[in-house]
Every structure is written in structure tokens, then in C-alpha cells.
Image (cartoon, rainbow, N blue to C red; front, side):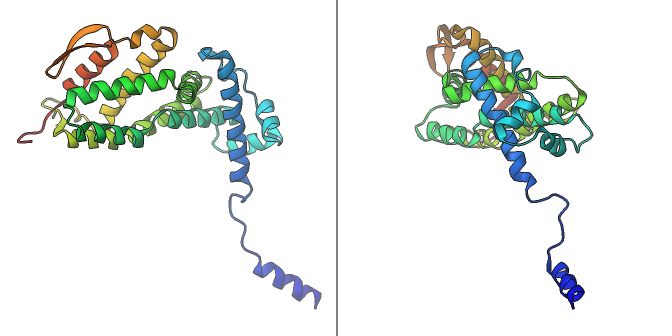
Length: 262
């Protein structure tokens, strides 16, 4: 009878899944260990942007997570790329997500519209607040510096490809916010009139993100770039503006137009 009991027990056991249930928690622990090491490093070293991937090693990450580095190689070595490169790419993706806050942006643009702010005034105000937050808010500043450091790491093709897909995914996440903003203010992307593909809302998000990130990177070293000290007209108002606000307004005006009959 013993063999029967053994077979019965085996028959009632759930089938093994391709990925063991222990691995997602272990992967999460390893990723959080890397994020902790990065936060600690950049909190101390601040603007050493190029050093982000140099001081994080598989040994350090595994020790912080309380497991062997063999687990890191096991989890991230399945893609065919170098395991640690794939791990670093995932850290970069997480940092990108932390920098962008589409829900907060949507609430801010709705509040500006409800208060009667014109489109140009809302663009300048929201843009200035966003850039100031990235540069001066401690948590977002750290995330931005981490992102700059990790996305600059191009040690292998896998990282370059992961960096591109991570950034593209971030623009996709922001696209609904920009689509909402244009709808609220009765604007649309300018239609194409020549050859080539039409401009998309993801293109629009990419253009604004790259402009903002470029100014933010400069402001880390030269905070004066945030100063509203240039005489400029915003809507019907003449007011001092930052160079970033003027550039953002020019970009948005160049890529969008009022919706007919809006």
C-alpha cells in the first residue's frame, strides 16, 4: 500500500510552474538592495553622475539583499545578455519611473485650468514647477541623478537596448497626461503635410521630457538656469521667465495648434 499512498500524494501536488514562487520575492529583494545602495551613494556623492554603476557590484548587492550573488546571475541571466548588465538596466527603469509622476501632473494641469489659467500660463507654471521639483526635491533629485548615471552605462548592447526600451516606456506612460492637457485646452498636435509618419503624442512626450531632463542636468551644476530673469511675454502678460520656460513654450507652440472650432 505504501506505493499507492506515495502516488496519491504526488498526484495531489500542484504542478511545478516554470518560475518558482520564491524567485519574484528574491528578485524584488535584489532590486531593492541595488536601489538602497544607489540612494546611499548619491546622497553622499551627489553629482558624480558617471560613477553610478561602478560602485555597485553583484557582491555588494547580494550582501545587502542577504543572499548569494549566484541568485542574481540565475534570475537575470536568462535573457542571453550578461546578467549584471540586465540587472543594472532594471535599476535604470525603476529610477525612470520614480522621476516621472503623470498622476501629479494631471492633477496640476486640471487645477490650473479650473483657476482660469491660459494655456501658455499653465505650460510655463507647470514646467517651472516640474523642473524645480526634479532639481530641488531630495527624493526626485536622487532618482534623477540615478537615472542619468545608469542610463549612461553602455557597457554592452543589452544595456543600450534596455535603456532605449525603458525610456520609450516612460514616454508612453506620460503620453496620456499630455493628451489630456491638449484636450482640456482645446489643442491638438500639428498634422503632417509632407512625407514621413505623423507626429504622435508619444513623440510629444519624448520632446518635452528630453528638454526638461537636459535643463535639469545643467541645473544640478548651475542652479542659475532656473532663475526667472529674462523679459518675456506669456499670453497677455509680460513677466520675467526662465530660459527653460521660454524654450518649453516655444516647443509646445511649435508642435501643437488650436483645435478648429474649439
